[in-house]
Image 1 (cartoon, rainbow, N blue to C red):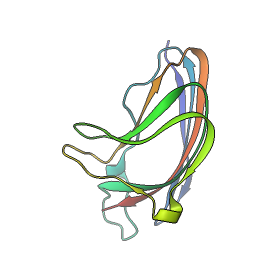
Image 2: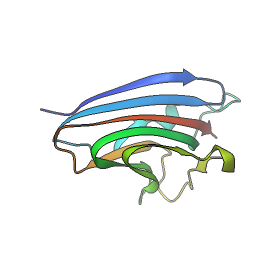
Image 3: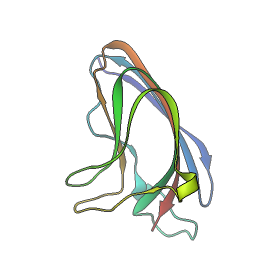
Image 4: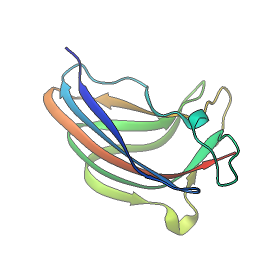
Length: 130
């Protein structure tokens, strides 16, 4: 079997995007699974996006934790999510993808410590950039 995952676009604005992700685990877990394909997005001017700025993350992780990263040769950590909470970087202009070597700009999730029945519910507010 595999984990049951869902992705929903909550808001698809010209400058801002909101995506909602859920996972009901069977214990398989996820490893560097691309959740946001940034090359499929455009910035406010309609230019193909190459990176993003994450403004806020709302999350509920039942057990274990979820590592959010920007894909790169050595992935760049966005956040490690455990328990319930909100991480809000809007007051400092957002958390910007550092665009390190080999970066694609995609946002990926890795679960760790997930057993059968564990789950996450994560909403990301971000801005595609070019």
